[in-house]
Amino acid sequence: MSKRVVIDPITRIEGHLRIEVEVDDNNVVQKAWSSSTLWRGIEVILKGRTPMDVGLITQRICGVCTYSHYRCGTEAVENALGLDIPLNAKLLRSLMQTSLYMHDHIVHFYHLHGLDWVDVVSALSADPALAAQVALKYTDKPIAAGEGELRAVQERVKGFVATGKLGPFANAYWGNSTYRFTPEQNLIALSHYLKALEVQRVAAEMLAIFGGKQPHPQSLVVGGVTSVRDMLSPSRLQEWKQKHAIVSDFIHRAYKIDIIMAADAFGSEPSVLGGVNVKNFLATDDFMLGNGEYLFNQGVIMNGDLANVSDLNPEHIQEDVTHSWYQADGPQHPYDGTTVPDYTGFVERDTVYGKLPTVDGDGKYSWVKSPRYQGEPVEVGPLACLLVSYARGNKVVVDAVNNLLSVTGLPVEALFTTLGRTAARMLQTVIVADEGLKTFDALIANIQVDESTYVSPEIDSEEEYVGHAMIEAPRGMLSHWIRIKNGVVENYQAVVPTTWNAGPIDQSGKMGPYEASLIGLKLEDPTKPLEVLRVIHSFDPCMACSVHVMDFKGQQLGEFRIDPAGNF
Image 1: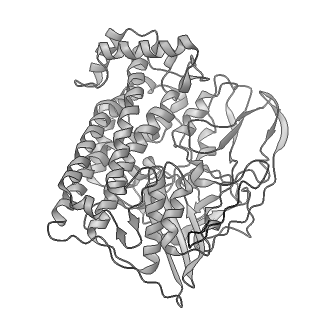
Image 2: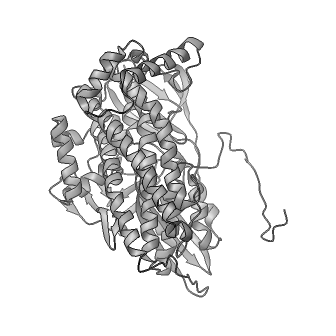
Image 3: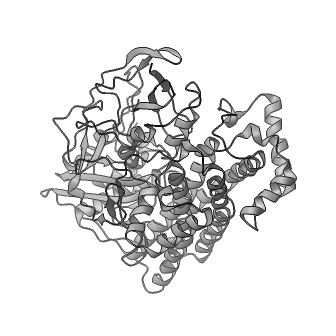
């Protein structure tokens, strides 16, 4: 007798995500549905506006990935207009991307994904002295893991428990048997969770140095950047490098160590040794290290075949809406994409929690579209990025991956797991932090001979322009696509990482990465589906990037009029 499990909302993510699974008598997932429940409207908002405002508007797609959309939108316009911006502008944009990654990945693991691995209640029974010794097993220079520090953390959290106000630690599935850390390992990771709250602030400040502020930086314009004084100020340059050193130190002495510790503890835990059932991967070139040199490589891997990686062809990308709440005659290339809502609602049925509205798996059930590459679902994200570069023979990536596999004792096949996906995000953070200094040095060298940061764009209202940009956002490959006519945006589409990963089944019945990753997963207790959360969180969902601007009753949320002359 199958049972329906509904998790709505999925918490510790950005945006609104609903996951439903159907389990058999052995609590093994047989079917899965990924549904996002708020509508996306940014593409519609952009129509008729000047291309010069695209970046500023698209960065409002999300409150986390603001810089990624800002940059991608700006570069889509530059591509359409045929602009080649100055090298200084490219390097500054890359430094801001480096800052974003170091911030985003730390926040994701510790404050969003970490509690899927760390049992906070178990940490309260740990021996701080023993925990300090355990920390030394993984590094001779542990951070925030001395006996006194660990004792203070334990007492602090016990204070939360005593008041009954658990804050972020409330309503979790503590005690689940798939938690594998010892009490002492849990205490170490919990200490790093709290330390990361301090470090992420420094990482955010890094981006703000050249971006003006974070989130929603404001220094990118079509044609280059405006942060000229910051670039030419020795004190501002040194400030970025000092903050980089602080954050990089935490990445090496805490984040990296905790993932190695997780590989040690969870290496035999079945619920994290699957979770990669779509073995097609997509990534693009990004992180400029110098003139024309990139840290990560573009490419496509199909069927998990690391011996064969092909070049990414933008023409092979389409979006399918067969099971999405949109209208379209068939799969559409982003240049010709439409955003026409067609909401059909839910179906009430029995679940493990009683009768509830559930998705209509035979009909439409999500506001997320289903991107496909040559008709096939693909995964994007840190794992895809590293696998493509690894398959390309990228020395930096090959050495980093092989070193991690050697340290953990895991085979290459371990990359194709939930544990591998989580480890890949950490490893990408380490690589970005280390190699980002090459970008910094290239900037310092270039401004000695060239201080240019901007070229003036020109738009002929009599001409039509088509362009796109592809970058690696923290959650994977992000692309923006634009058509310009009569001097304004005629059509716009953003194909975001979470759309690639979270989309529903397509017209051929093929599942996307989220849904496929859950098939075959065994749950200890369907009413407390920690295993599902751990798998889904490993993708770092950002539903705000995928959907926007509607409440569940379809009511108008607000109407705003802005007079360009400033009369409100």
